[in-house]
Image (tube, each protein chain N blue to C red):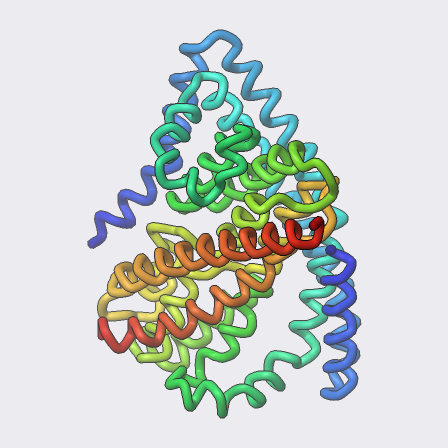
Length: 199
Length: 175
């Protein structure tokens, strides 16, 4: 999958670079990008260790179980397979909570372990419906307190930097709901098509 | 409203406090932390090859001038939809790169003023969308036995479009 992504990006950038005469920038950017990738991961290492450690303690103590029981009534409709099998359920809850609380550094490591757990119960190399829903939901921001945006707005001299919060909540909630609905519909559609294919 | 920012600064300390208390309370709490932390480090290291491919591709695309060209291409369409032309660079960089879209956002605040229509729409877009290519690719890289992302990209892209349209509608309602 990553190879397809890479292929498209390289073709597009070389095409555009050639047309706009930015080829030297493109070639510099390739090496900068490679160096940048390692910097990003290394700067993520500390957060990965910390939050995975915290998660393990919270899991061991049963705190995550309590959290997932609390969120079950809502989330079991978005992730039906995961709730049935139980694999990755706690991680999904914890990752979504980290997203909502705006601990982005914690959300990524937790989400990765959620994906790993969910992929563990897949019978073949096909991603499960819930994995797709979870990834698509991760791609829509759920952050309740957009502190970076507020800081940037205040820095630019806004009269009321907080005005954006309520519209952001509405927009985020709509986007998240639509993401889950579209994913569930696609999943049902794919299931129906597979069943017809078997008959 | 400052209380929101004050509240936000308490979230991480509160979670860590809870963790510290539980670590003392349960048996083998320290060992559990070490196990988790080691697992996290291994995940991070396994992420490097994926990240290198992704970052090389994305930074090449940003440098190639594709954003400027596409801005010119789609501005007639967005004009008709009532989307301010100033936010197009932001819309195009948002799914691809967090740092590039933050730069585009900061530039927009500077250029149009933080309380202009374009800046308010842009703020809502920034607050309710994420770097979808990065997120989906990294998430799926953790599931090594899985091939293909099925409907993840189409759904995320459709929601991104919805987010842009919705932000402009919300701007008209709220401001």
